[in-house]
Length: 249
Image (cartoon, rainbow, N blue to C red; front, side):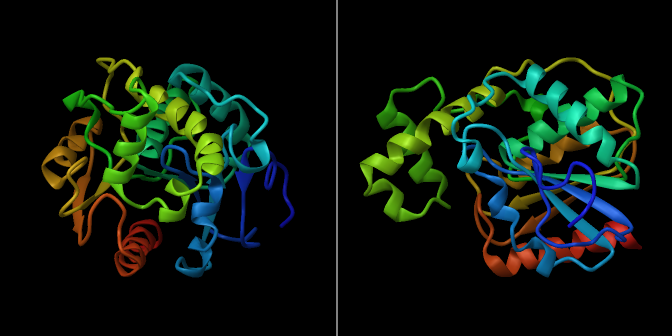
C-alpha cells in the first residue's frame, strides 16, 4: 500500500484500501502484536481499511523498550496517528487495547483533533470499576498462571522456556500500562461506544462492561458474544459484521 505513515514502525495495513471510506485503527491485547489483525481485511468490506497498531517490544520492534505508562504511550500514538486521520476513522481496542484506545481518544480531544466516528471496545472491564489488573506486579509464576487462565495463548509457548522468556517482558510492561493508569474524573466523550463481551469471560463479563456507557455522552451499545475472553472465530466474524454495519450504514 502507498500512503504516508502506513507500514511504518507503528502501523500495519495488510490490504491496499486507499479509497476506503473509513479507517479502523486496531489496538491489540497485552503482549500481542499487530499481526493478530492480519486477516481482518478479509472479514471487513472494501469500505473499511483496518490499520493495526504495532507497539514497541515485540516482533520487528523487539529491540525497542516497551512502554510502561499510559501517558507517554498515548502522546506518541497521537503524534503518529494524527496525520492518518485525514478521513473518517474509528478505533477498536481488545482487552488492554480498549483502554489504550480510550486514552488516545481523550488525548486527541484535548488536542482539538478530529474525533473518531465510533469507539469499539472488547473484553475489557469498564474503567470506572477500577478493577485491579493482575499479573504485572506478580512473580513470573503468577504472570504465567494469569496468562493460562485467560486462554488465547498458543499452548506451545508454555512448553518453550526460551520463547516464554522473550515474551513475558512486553506482556508485563503492557499490563503495567493499564494497571498503573489513573482513572481520572474526565468529561465523557461525544463519541458513540459499542462494547463486545464474551458471555463466559471471567475477566470482563457483560456485567463489567456495561459501565463503558459512562464513558460517552451519546450512544452506547453492549453486544454479548459466545465464548470467553478470546472469542471463537465465528463470533469474531459476527463482531466484524456488526462493526461494518455501524460504520457504513
